[in-house]
View 1 (spheres, rainbow, N blue to C red):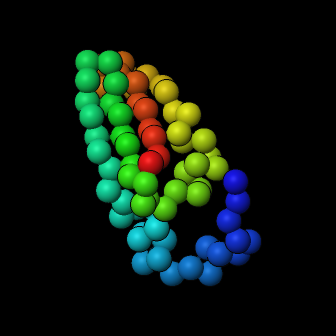
View 2: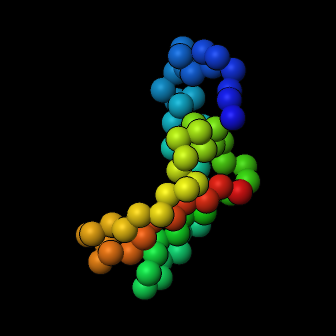
View 3: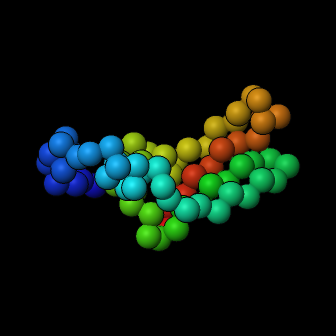
Amino acid sequence: MGWPRGSYTTAHSSHLFRDFIEAQARVTITDNAVEVAFGKRAHSPLPLAAGFQDTDLAVPWWGGRKLKISFG
């Protein structure tokens, strides 16, 4: 997966915030996991490239619940 080289090297903070932070997601908390599901329209090339969709780790301060992240 890739994105245009340099597309974010000169981006303003408002652009970065809009693309990576200001995204809607559905958060579901169960006895075993905290699942964060970003919608299809979420701009996610960097989180996907970082492998966030493969996140499945236990968080001690959540009582050992696992964090799971998915995109669209």
